[in-house]
Amino acid sequence: MIEVQNITKNYGPFQALKDISFQVDKGQIVGFLGPNGAGKTTTMRILTCFMPASSGRVTIAGYDIFKESREVRKRIGYLPENVPLYPEMTVTKYLKYMAKIRSVPRGSIKARLDNVIEACGLTERRHQIIGQLSRGFRQRVGLAQALIHEPDVLILDEPTSGLDPRQIVEIRELIKALGKERTILFSTHILPEASMTCERLIIISRGKITGDVQLEGGRAVPEQDDTNGKQVAPATLSLEVAGAAADDILNALTDIQNVLQVEQIDAGTDATVTFRLHYTPTTDIRAEVAEIIVGRGWQLLEMHTTEMSLEELFLSLTV
Image (cartoon, rainbow, N blue to C red; front, side):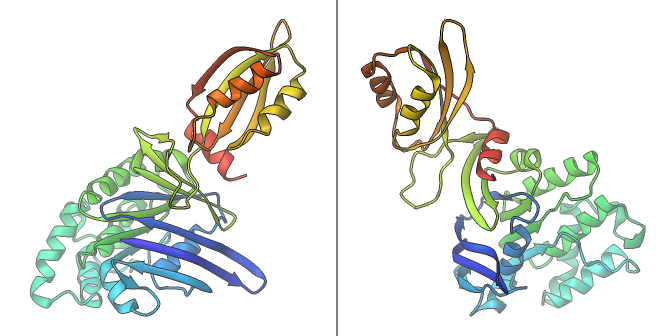
């Protein structure tokens, strides 16, 4: 549904996006996660035809956003971080105005208004002046305008920014409900929010895609296949070793293929040392680790895989 290929964006000598590529399939709710200034909003503005890329190619629903932007705009609904609402208009008048702008057929406008107002929980606010609404309800109006033309794809930029905890929960549940019928890509820098809403996270840092992570129950699931060229979520192996200096063990573990990072956790009693290895899970490295340790005459006292928390994963991919 969304395919991004080798996109770059330059502002003079500064490169905001650095050859990024990813794909979002039909029916997925995908979080676009990264620190402030990572390139999230720039990417969103390119995908929604508000800004050209410096190079690369993007297609949405099979249409090229640069060559066929009119067709793309018909198929996407966009909620920017700061929703451009008209505070002096009522909810109904504003949505009717947006329906006309989005070329909704005149005979279908009333039905579309009723549908999006109900879907976004605005029934009791439909005749209220927008300027009198809370920020949470203004976000609902923003979502309603993004849905008014029945798009296949929703692109949401920081949809819960500035909301209180109750409003965040309400918008989160609304996004989940909308995702049952649409493809949704939304950006955020709030990790818990992404983990509770999405089935997949694309992580961006300093203009580069650094991770692509499947989620189950809010937890990262290590990918077992990197044949599509994307970076996969690392797996973690913990082990306790005795019989050698910590630096010698660390150097030996670091040299193992597919090991991304080795952490020394602590030096225990009786000259034992505990390590944590983060590695690309395309192969099982446990046999190789055991062979190296035992082959050098060291003692492998314990070895087991451990689950990397989503927070640890995010920090490791945004350094």
